[in-house]
Length: 384
Image (tube, rainbow, N blue to C red; front, side, top):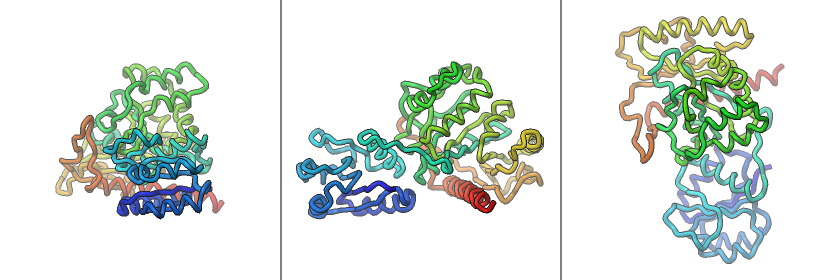
């Protein structure tokens, strides 16, 4: 059953945008009542006491009628603030209204969970999907694609964990968040085979306030990552899925077909291969596909059926042969991204990716392809 949500804000344009977002991205999860005027809210209080789970109300409106709100048992009250209004007298949890829609919803759920004891758990048939982003060649923009995919999924209202498994991750170039704990805290528990790793995962994860993407700060040293075994890595992926906190886990892998990456690829629901327009990439991609086919025949896991292709920094005037020219590649799944010199926009502590360009369009198309494939898989299961 969906939560009963009341949203009260005199900014009609903002209110309509938030209600539309909920209708499109959170269908069936909330029963929404939207109010813009003070008298409408007072009338609602009078007639609907004890009939709401969450009240999301603008700070200026709450201040006007705060005494009326305190007189009734009215569910969890959360203040929408632009960050420029003193809130010392309101004594309610607050959410910054000007951020990604999924971040607003996730913050709202966290506050409600804390106050009411409601825990979000994914149903078994809605378990987290693991998407691996891989390339047989370094320097082709693999991490940028992995981060962009995470952002696009988050902007569509999904709970996303960006998991960088490179020896030298560049996570902090794109995301900012808490720095008290990092991935080493999780890796230590894995190596010690501690039973309750889910609490360590939650304690070590950060959330980027701008995008709402979850991530881990890089480990203290690459040696921490090197000491993790293949079995421990597989357990990590399983534990991350079991938490029920994520809809998608986007794994950014190193450009090496080692045993650890093979384990990760085998646990992925989808694999994004990032290609470049170069002869080197073409040769490496040919070798990679042949090895994936061999591994698929041995492990009985059809790795090649999970592949989606990104041709990054594409130049249609370039005459250099690339992997996209090979017959081994499924061209129906190929998405081309042109070179964009202004893709990274400097922010206060990191860089933000410009999603309002052809790169963002490509990420949207990639997400649609992934969602279509997942839908087709479910239909196939129902037909059996």
